[in-house]
Image 1: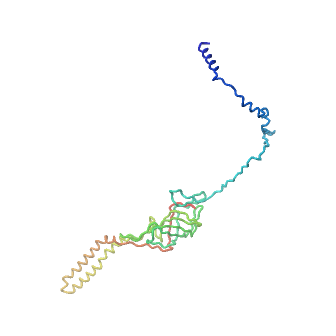
Image 2: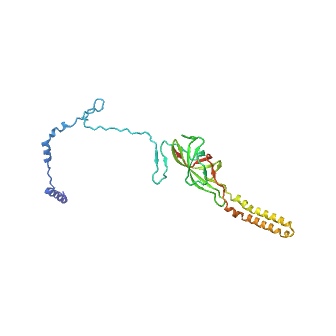
Image 3: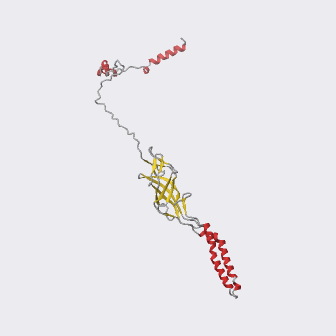
Length: 291
């Protein structure tokens, strides 16, 4: 053993002999337990282990269950519930059907209907009108019977305007009432009173081009009047010399009305729109609708 090992062993012996590194077992707690309890009989007080029969299944131990609370199972209703879901704040305020059992009426569906109201270009914007379907529309899982009410709103209307413009009516389909429930939708008019409608605008006839000849011919009566005066002047030898003057004046006025007729026609107005109650319409959905 070299010097280093001898010094290391001596250091360990001195270190362990110090009082701060010594320890002593405290058996006072163990003595107190033995005074109060019979430690040799603890195993006798333990509950019996479950026995196993010859078939290998565990025999249940007979223990008291008087104070064991009973847990009651509550059945869960798994039946499908249908209903309507309101949109979240900030979304469209309409109430739409949003459930697993709803059926869809496809966009592009057309309805042949009759108006329940008289409609004119004097109607106010926002006025509510209704239509009644005249034939049954059938799709997969859904049927819209004849007599169904379709609701609409007049979104734009005005009387005939200058520059030959006619009156205007714009109608937007807003809902369909089926089985007493009105579902919101969007739609437009394809035909009104058996006339095709473009861009959902029911327009009165524009008369600008038609009114140009009308304004041009306004000088014609004056020209005829001047011609008659000239003929009478030729019957008299004293006024015969002046007879060309009325003819020239009538020709100037007539020519002027022809030249300015395109400008005069700007101040004319087109036709008005008046659709009676019961008039036929063709409507078209522009979005899907769920029932």
